[in-house]
Structures are given as structure tokens and as C-alpha cells.
Image (cartoon, rainbow, N blue to C red):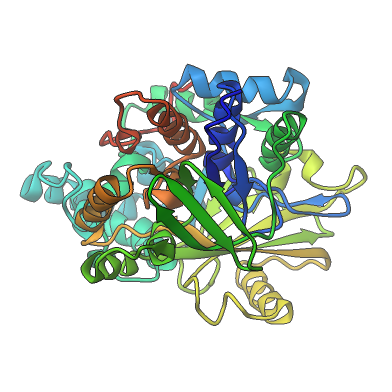
Length: 464
């Protein structure tokens, strides 16, 4: 054990727990401080008796053998299930498979609409070519250039407004380039893809993996301190001292942080210059409220996720938990178990709304969707900083904050989705943590280069 090394970790999500595991593997004992009462971050699995909730829907894919090996080391094979990926968009009463397939667009929505959409797409391609492929355009410009105005308005405009609570012209297309597939026109191969695309999933939800990580750390003497938000992080020479909301303090030689980058800059002592604080303070997030609803009636929804761009419902996306894992519900459950996802302002009124108010919103959406069923059970999961917003200022702002922190706080290691203000998957968050620990031990590597490729589509990835 390296007695002179005693790093501190803020956050017990995928990044924080991965960093802790890697430190322990190198003979170093960290201390972990988590603001909430769960481990796993957005990938936690809150429970109420035998009911379990996956707040964001977490597919386990990766291109990294190292990440895959860690997953397999934490949960044995019998704790993983293989799930066929099936997603759809609910448009005009039709389930349209997603990623979009040309044959569906030309037939399922009616011939006239299909030809209208195709001509709109061809016209946009003719006008714009591929000049929006570098991620510099707004989401609206990128979407109309990629799909044509008709299909963009039908499938994406409303959903993006619900997700980011802003005009699609005010956010960049960086995250869309990575996550939204072009329309598939090679019908046979695309059909094979949607039928054969599978991912792996812990049978008790994503939090099962991170609870196993916490248990492994506990065996090594590292127990995350829950309900312990950090309100101040002071650098005094080579030493860091963090102060928790309850007034307790802890001191270490380095600080690994997955707390939102904006909040980290606010907590730093000595404080960064005013202009750096202002830049960081302008970084935005979207929150997420997941309302898990158990309906006594069986509703046939043959998809894991259903995206709902229509204006007549407030919900942005619906998870069908029965297609993720039957063990998210009690053993004797024979109804329908759904997760209604509402994207919110992190400090807005809806985040603090009562359960009764949220229940009324869900009931209205159920009626608008034509679902008539008694409700057996409801759970509410609030995630305040779920998604970093990619507005027009994001790239330059994050770069300026990053460069300032590197120069003036060299033993500070931001990591993960919120720590780097980057729309990462679980495996990206884990990789940024692994590289941050390697950098702590002297490796000449840059964790900020994780997940910077233009496209990162979840096909042909490692999953078992």
C-alpha cells in the first residue's frame, strides 16, 4: 500500500466507482463522497419492495475489452441477460421502428406520406450535401439536412424540444452525430440488424452492477459515504481538503470529481477568476424524472423504448420494463410495467413537484395514448443533473474551463459525464475514470480524449 497516496473521490456513479476500483488495484485506498443515498448515479436501480426502476434505460455495450472485463468481473454470467434491442417512435398512432428504416417510412405511414418524405430528404441532400457532418451545425440544420424537413419535423423536432426544453436551432448536433443513425435503405441488412441487435443487461437492473462494485470496494476497506454532498474543495499546496454539507472534512493528495463541472468550479477554493466562474456557471443540464407505472392490464408494446415526439403528450420517452428484464417487477406480476420519462429543468418547478402532481401528468398522458387501465403501483425517481446540454457555447466553454483547471489545479481530475460535461455512455465514463487514475500515477495520457469520435453507434460492439 502506498501510504503517501490518499486520494479523494467525489461521486459514486460509474466514473467514481471505476476510479476507486482502479486505485485499489494499484494499492491505494481512496475515500468516496456521494451526494445521494444510492451508488450508481443515473445507472442506479431504486427499489420499492420487489419493484425496481431503471431511471434512464441502460444498455451494456462497449468497444473496450477493459471495460467489458470489469463488468464480467463484477457480476457472474448467470446475473446477465441478453436483451434484443427494439425501439420505436410513436407517430400518428403508428409505432415506427427506430433506427429508421427506409422500407417502413415508404410503406407504414402510407404511400403518399412516404413519397413526400423521400422527396423532401432528396431535396435537402441536393441543397446541403453533407456539409453538416462535422457537428458544427445546429440540431435543426443537421436534422433537416440528414432526414429532410418532412421527416425531421415528424420524428425529431418535437422530441428534441421535449428532451432539451429549447429550440433545436439553439443546440449543436454533436451528440446527434454520435447517437442518431441515418435512415437505413438496404432493407434486408437493416432488417437483420434490428432483429439481431442485442445488448446485455443485469437481471436486476443497472444498479446491480454498481452495487456489486461497491461491495467489492467494501471488501477492500473502501465504503462510499452516502448523502455526503461536497460544498467546498480547497487546494492548499499539494493537499486537497473537501468540506461536506454537514461540516465534516477530509484531506487527500488528489481529487477525482464526477460532480457537475459547473458545481465543481463553484466549490473550488481558492476560487478561479471571475470569468472562468462565469463560463462554468453558464453550462447547462437537463434533469430527468422517471415515473414507473404498473398497469393491471397487459398492453402489447413490443419495444424496449418508445419515443413520443407528439405535442399531445408531455412524456418524452417510455420504457417497457418487461422487455428489459422481467425481474424488475415482482415474480407474480402479469400486467404492464412502464417507465415514463420527463425531461425537466434541474431547478424548475417540475423537479420539486409533488408525487400527486406527477401522477396527474402521467394519467393525462395515459389517456392521450389511449391506454385505459387501473394503476397497481407508482414510483418516482428524480435525477437532477442527468444530461449535459450541447448548446452553441458548450465546446469552447468546456475547453476554457478544462485548460484553466489543468494549469492551476494539476492534481484535480474531472471525469465522467457530468465531471467533463460530455454526453457519455457508461463505458465512456468508466474509461475517463481509468485514464484519470493512470494519469494520477504519471501516465502521459489525456482522459478528455475519451468519446471524441464523430460517430459512436451501438452496433458491432462488445456486449458479452
